[in-house]
Image (cartoon, rainbow, N blue to C red):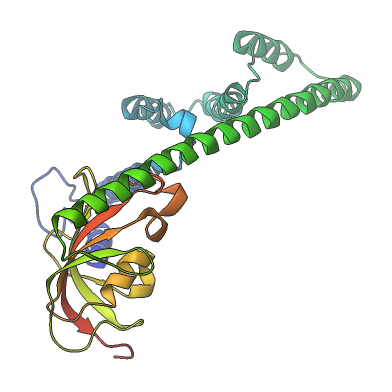
Length: 301
């Protein structure tokens, strides 16, 4: 499905048409507008996906409307004002550096920085001797700043690790309690040596999924509080047991075509101590999956 959608987008740009589906959403009809349209669509989607890569302190304050306001300022700038564009570029680079310094406990007076920048920049010339003196002083100050930043980063990392460990221990205990209650209420739930618990809703027929086979699976994944974090939405998705988290792969290898299981994957067999980068699955969270193997493609075919 993803490849089909990508092919559709490329064709639309190349041919200058509105879209593969012919939707009436204001999509363009000329090459120039098609290029603009799909640059915007694609880049917007890319940055939406990659918000999770923003450092955590910034992500907590991140606002999409503010981001768009900054983007719009640059895109709508008068390209004839070359100096203005250069100033925007230098200002953004400095701003990113200052934000990182602020987070690391090294605040900088922006008004003073700008005033001194402007004073030096407006001079007709700067001697090499003066430049060398300024560099020596700044390097000394930046060296001290880097030491402070490193100490703050290490402190933050230690605190984050402690917080993560506490959350992991809490989730481990909650998951264990959840599975034990489920087993007490339903004696058909079994547990393997690895710690994976499962209930056979229906056992299929034929050969079970092999290590390198491709299983076509319909699934829904939830946290123990019932929050759904993933689903194939009723469509079969292809997996090899080696391509998924250990508990999911272990369950697949017990199933054959037509099998339906409910599985309970403890944190150590799922996403472990770190959880997922997007935060949907917390550290050491126990996962509950409803699985159905609708077909198996043997390895080598």
